[in-house]
Length: 304
Image (tube, rainbow, N blue to C red; front, side, top):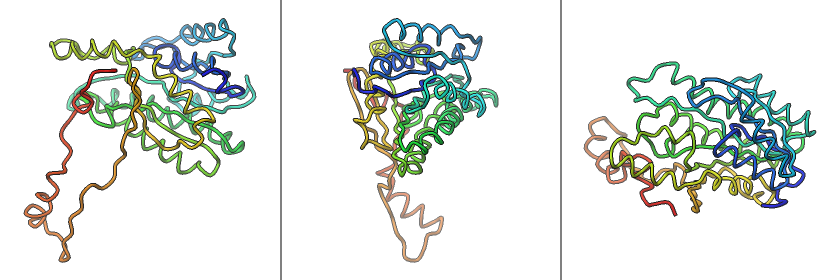
């Protein structure tokens, strides 16, 4: 990774620990000047502080890199703009945005509160839009830039008790595609990664039954720093032809995800009635219906 991002300036949100920390360190090792953004709160939103962002910044500087801490929240338009302004004021420009900040408010759908819904949407989906939008004008003017957003198989495939998180993460995949379409003319790229890693975000996964305990044991084998090389690549000029894609990174695997396209069509020259749909159309398509799967059902092989 050495030198791949030489001369670039990057913002990494949620960079105080786990996956984000690994990304920030790798970006700096690859030559980028890094804004280490983290509000320093727990996953459930309790407490804030400069500690995590400052610690990662000090790690980067101690290793010979350049970085600055930033504790602004991604969840409002104004504070997200402040994150990007920190990069521009400190390092003179912005080239890379990694939208990694996240939180969890897991609850089964029929018991989820308005607050639990809004808090997750605010950080993941709104935060990704706000930070990306703040950088967009700079990217457009300089006719270059790279976005890397974190999605999740909880949204791409599905999971229990995560309606808020799943909706936000699938929304991020759609947002990334829209950014890629709208900004391609300015040589701006936007891609997603669905990371598989043991971190604060996954440490709240239940481990009560034998099946759940076995799953958690597998997850713990997936190191969070394994995500960083793909992020560095996507942010670099080496990925100039990679745009609007969704990747998965799990231990030593890199996956390319499909995106929704029609897989079956039925036609009736006389038009459809509810009865003829029940009699003809639905049975004709039934073989192609997607199963009611969760992420572990679809990606059911052990980490490599």
